[in-house]
Length: 146
Image 1 (cartoon, rainbow, N blue to C red):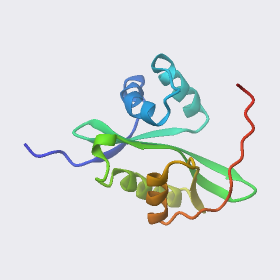
Image 2: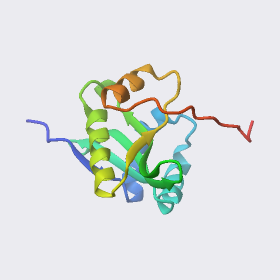
Image 3: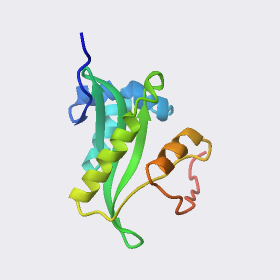
Image 4: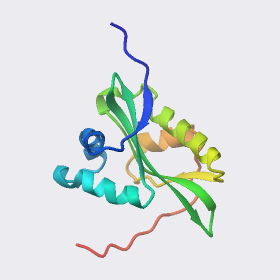
């Protein structure tokens, strides 16, 4: 039996969001499964979109994004989260999602797609640079919690 083609769909229902938890937990290990759908729901009310790239109706890669506008850049699409099942890497899923964000950004008249990535994530940096992203700033944080 041949595999169904990959499709990108938004996780909107609680069930769809909960299906994303195992993958998102790989990227965001501090997340608590019983609180995940409520967290996503709160973020969705603030403009967050959780997209699933599915193969045979199974999420294999996820992308969370928001449309943002500020005085520095103007209107842009910000990628909050991007993760692929570690057993399915090197199949182009993350690239497919990043290419999809570029099209969404263009449809919304954005001037850029932007994201942050941890220093230690060399594989992701290689992907982003290969996709045409450029290092453009240092992201600084002052934690208010221990």
